[in-house]
Amino acid sequence: MNRPFYNSNIQLHTKVIDDIFKNFTKDTKFLVYGLGYDSKMWFNGNKNTFFVEDNDFYIELNKDIPKTNIIKYDYKDITVKKSMTMTDDEINTYDIPQKLLDESPFDIILIDGPAGYEEDKFGRLLPFHWCSKLAKKDTIIYADDCKRELEKYCIDKYFSDKKKYYFTERMGCCKIIV
Image (cartoon, rainbow, N blue to C red; front, side):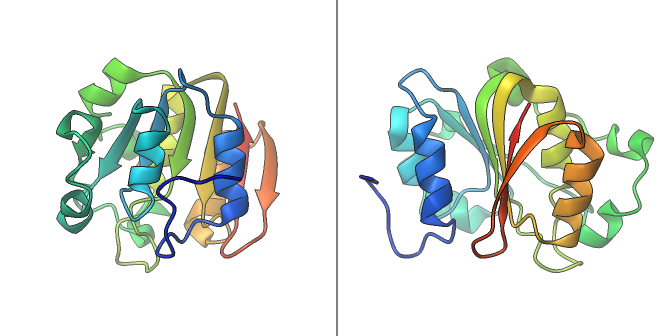
């Protein structure tokens, strides 16, 4: 499959990338949690892609993407470790950014940020929680690194009754059909 803007720094497996593009049209509204080396590829798919990012390095790396398509978000103190013990009431105190509400619903959502690879790093609890509210019927959610403890927990918490397909490459990616 042709992948314009693909580069060797992209960590998401090509099987997942190809599956996303298989479901991609000129009208697809796409939300990506996490900017990175793949962001130009996603944005240039149809220029109707929005990103949520906490790390200034990745925002600067992707300075060619219009600022109107990037939502800078401070996850404050929601680490991987803390995410595992938060109550629904505590989670609900973190409001969805207005820009996401304005742009929703989304056709495809990729959860690939924040980093979440150590218990003291920001975790992906909020992206999963927000996805459960920003999706519509037939939204496709891709949850990268789904073999990690927090990601498994969030998939079970928010999407236990939804159809799922698992890509087993790398740390896994779960495709969820809402």
